[in-house]
Amino acid sequence: MSDITLRTEGLSKRWGAFHANSDVSLTFKPGARHALIGPNGAGKTTFINLLTGSFLPSSGKVYLGGEDITTLPQHERVHRGMTRTFQLNTLFAGMTVLESVALAISERRGLQSVWYKTVANHPDVIAEAMELLATLKLTDQANSITRSMAYGKQRLVEIALALATRPRILLLDEPAAGIPSAESKELFEVLAHLPRDVTVLFIEHDMGLVFRFADRITVMVGGKVLTEGTPEEIAADPRVKEVYLGEAEHA
Amino acid sequence: MSAMTDIVSPNASQPVSIAKTAMTPTPASRTHLNLPNDRWKPMEIAFWLLPVIAYFAFPGYLVLISQIMIIGLFALSLDLILGYAGIVSLGHAAFFGLGAYTAGLLAVHGWGEPVSGLLAAAVVAGVFGFIVSFLVVRGQDLTRLMVTLGICLMLHEAANKASWLTGGVDGLSGMMVGNLFGVFEFDLNGTVAFWYSFAVLFVLFVVLRRMVKSPFGLSLIGIREGVRRMPSLGVNVNRRLIAIFTVSATIAGIAGALLAQTTQFVGLDSLGFPRSAELLIMLVLGGTGRLYGALVGAAVFMVAQDYISGLNPAYWQFYIGLLLVFIVLFARGGILGGLEKLAAGFKSKKEAV
Image 1 (spheres, each protein chain N blue to C red):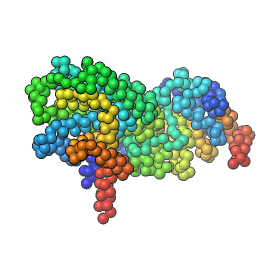
Image 2: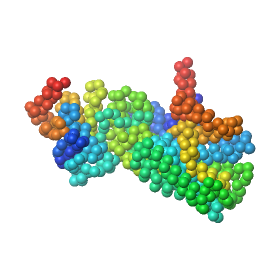
Image 3: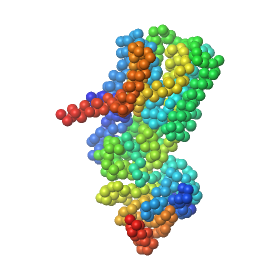
Image 4: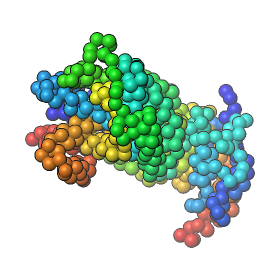
C-alpha cells in the first residue's frame, strides 16, 4: 500500500487584503476520521478547495504521500485517490441518478475511450452503480431526474458520486447540511462503513455527529488553525468553548 | 404513443432489465432501469424510411431532398457540440466550407474520385477543428461565440481574397467529379447524388448515435448538465471538449464536401456567417441534444424556405423568424421537444382515464 498521507505546509489564500487561510499546516494520516470545525467564515471550505485544486494557494504546499500536488489539476488529484463533495449540491440536474453514478463509475474505469459501446452494454458498471445506490437507500430513485428530487435525497447523490470514484481520501464539505437529523445519522452510518484505510476529512456543524464520528478534530478560526487534537482534548479546551460561546453571543 | 416518446426523448432510452446482471438481490432487480442504449425503436425505423418514400413520391425534388440530408448532416455536427457538450458556435460554416473547398479543389485539379475526396475533406476539416478547439475550450459562452464567429469570418475573407485558388465571389467551378465507385455517374436528375448523400448520412448517423449513448457521450451530457462537478469525477473537461469539437468539425467538413460533390460547385457562401446562423436556427427549431432534432430542423427549415420563398421570395425569412420565436417561447426543446411534451401529456391523460 502506497503512502497516502495528505499534508499541507504553510497553506495560505488571500483575496486582496482578505486572508481566507493563513499558514495552515496539517497532516491527515491514512484511515483518519478527521473533523474540521469552526465558526462560519473560518476558512474551512477554502481549505478544502485548496486541497482539491479548485483554487491555487497564494503560498504554501500540498503533499500527497511524498508528491507535491500543489499545482496539480483537480482531475489528476481524483486519479490519485482524492475526491470531495460540495457544501451546495453540485450535481447533474437533468440526468437521472443512475446515469450520474454510471458516469462517475465509467470515468473511474476509463471507459470514455470505449465510444462504440453503449452505457447499457456495460452490465458490470450498472451492477456496481445499483449496489452503490442500494447502500445509500437510493434504489427506488435510480430512474429519477436529479433536479426533481427532494433536497435530502440529492444530498445522498452528492455522496454517491464521490464514493463512485472509490476514493482513498474523501473530503466532505458539510455532507449532512440540509437533511433531517435522522437521515444525517444514516448518512454517517454509511460513511462509518467505508474501508478502514480510507481517510475522511469532513466539515460538520453538528457537534453530536462530530464527536461520535471523528477520531481527530481541527478547530479553525479566522483562517488559522486554533488547535488540533483528539475529541477529548478538544472538548476540554477552554479556547474552543470560548469561540463557540462567543459566536452564540453575537448571534 | 410510447414509440413517439421514444424517438423524441433526448436519452431515447428503453428499459434495460438488470435482473441478469445485478449481483445483489435488491428490489431494483425486478424493475427497469433507463440507460442510454442503441436499440432501434419503430419510430426511428419509420423516420429513416421517409427519404426512401420521398424518393419515389417526389422524383422531381431529388435535389432538394439531397440538400436537406446534407444540411441535416451539417446540423448533426453542430448538435454534437451544442446539444450534447453545450458549446455554442456561430462559425460552424468554417468547417463546412473548408470541407467543401477541399473536395472542390481536389476535383478541379484532377482528383475527382468522390469517396477519397470526402475523406480528404474530413481530414482537413478535422485537423483545423482540432487546432481551433484549443481556442474554443479556453472561454465561456460569449468568448466561444466570438472565437468561432471570428474564425469563420477570417476564413471567408481569406477565400474571398485568394480568388486565384477559390474563384472568389464567383465561386469554384469546373469540378470534375468522377463516378461513384467508378460505376455510378452523377446524373442531372440527382439520383446518384440522392443515394450517395443518404448513404453517407445514414452511416455517420449510426456511428454518432452509438457514440452519444456511450460513456463518452454520457460524459458530454455531464459537462452540459454539471460542468463544475466533472473535475471531481476525474474528468479532464477540456480534453473531452477538444475531442468532440474535432469530431464535430470532421462531420461538418464531410457535409461540405458532399454538397460540393453533388452540386459540382462551391460558393463563397458555404463559408459565410449566414450559413452558420441558419444552422443554429435549424438545430434550435428541430430540438438540440437528440440527433433527430438536427435532421427534422433542417428538413422543416429547407422545405419552408423552398415553399414560402415560392409564394413570396422577398419575405420568407419573416415566417422563419416567427416560427423561431414561437418555438423558443412555447416549445422549448424545439419541434421534437414540443412533440415529446404533447405525447407525454396524452399518455398521462390516458392513464388517468
